[in-house]
Length: 287
Image 1 (cartoon, rainbow, N blue to C red):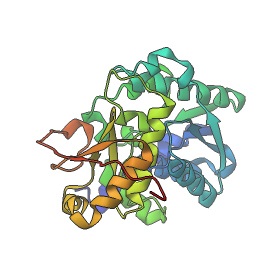
Image 2 (spheres, rainbow, N blue to C red):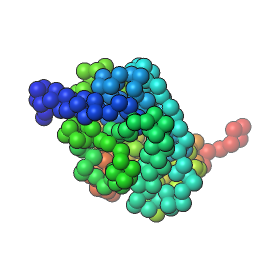
Image 3 (cartoon, one colour):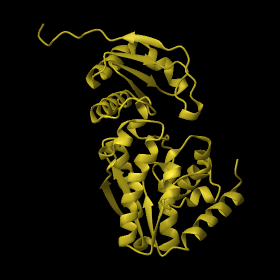
Image 4 (cartoon, rainbow, N blue to C red):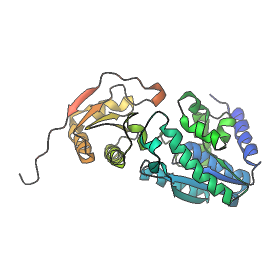
């Protein structure tokens, strides 16, 4: 655990880094890491010298866009939502292991154009120490496009970032980590707007049942549902089974699998033996 003095030293390091730039373009997602980076950028160079940019596509949920917009609004920062071009990139659509590289490349390419228009601006994004433990092709894209990672350079962890977010009163301080919807599609299965829409509808339906952290993995006609391990019993409860089934039916699935080991980040995921529930066809209204 980082001590208070150490945390403030790392915070000061980020500010010092940011102050070396006259203009800053922040890649703002709906998560806590980029939100803290945006707040520190405003403190370092002033609100008029910062612009927040969020990439919008079918792989990003409305909730993520809304959280990003709220953070920018609360900090008084100009916020641009740009349409990224990954769906025009066949390398991205093929969904190989380097999918994130192509997605991030499209985003950073767009941010680079915005930075040139505000020259001499630099593009920064919210990578942190925790990201180093995973396979992150997006970090390779950042390096290739010259995108800076001040939080990572200062040695900030997820715990550190959450503490700084709480101190700053940022509303996403406790928000669970998220990834784009394309991460729910198995590697090698092409990314399509239809599959992404199915996942989005299914996760929205489960969140409506009170599950705060949800992953619905797309496996053809079936969905694999992941929630935190302590919420698995409620997901499996007979009283909720009908509502869960209906959420999957509404999303276009015909069956679902509950991950008995609960949700784990990709780098820590180990599959146990799942429990399969078939969704029975529902009678038409009036029959």
